[in-house]
Length: 187
Length: 169
Image (cartoon, rainbow over all chains, first blue to last red; front, side):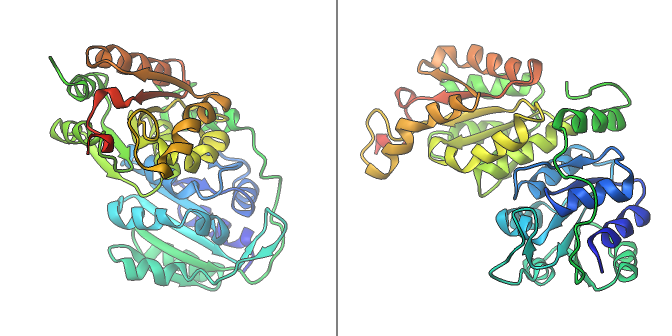
């Protein structure tokens, strides 16, 4: 499956969810398939998307949160997987776009296959799944409730959409407007 | 005389802080215990950048977090500050214990002890030193105002003069 197909499956299966997309292909694909809807798009800080999603999920228990991570991003902040397993917010799903490459930094191959779903399964307390097509991903997201981690196997490596270099203040303001129905809700 | 961490815990709770993300540290153990006793949700996270990113997510969701860490981990979290908290203008209050300065006997702590505050200030994080127990409440309140009011990143630096650290043996 392609990155964009995977992220489209997320958005179409969980239309009310707030997505947290890691820098690179995840943010680009989410921008494309959601038409720049208000989500938390990372424009940097590789390795920080999962702990950011963990904090957001715990602050917003009434919202469904989906962290969309490249496998390179997750590897850079892999300890957060243990934190996810430790605290297991019941409203947090993690989708790992597993193509085996650091795309945003120039397409370097990961030195190791991440096997994120197997690792999460070994940690315990998290539902896990592996999807090889957009249809399988949609099915897994429907059937495996949060907290869960679904590994989406990306076998067609194409850059998915617009630039991932988002304007942080615009991202924050639009998401605050969505979450709090006001101009800013950080107070 | 009230010990610094008791006033700090009271002020944090009075200000509506509900969750503490932390990397363990001996000097901060009194504050960690005090927050837990006051029903603050405690989130032990393995890395300082996780704490900053977690707290940013909390802030975006409307939460009021505090981060506690040791200065030896400042290098770990600079990217989380520089590419997340600061550009998204998310103010995070941090309480950081100092190592590698007055009374330090571990050579491996000294380089970051010398550099931590300068590193933070270089990327625009304000650092306020706490050396007296009776100023803890006032200074914690000030750091919270900077973070939650002005949306600035601010660190209360808990200096060795307050005791409770590894230098005490």
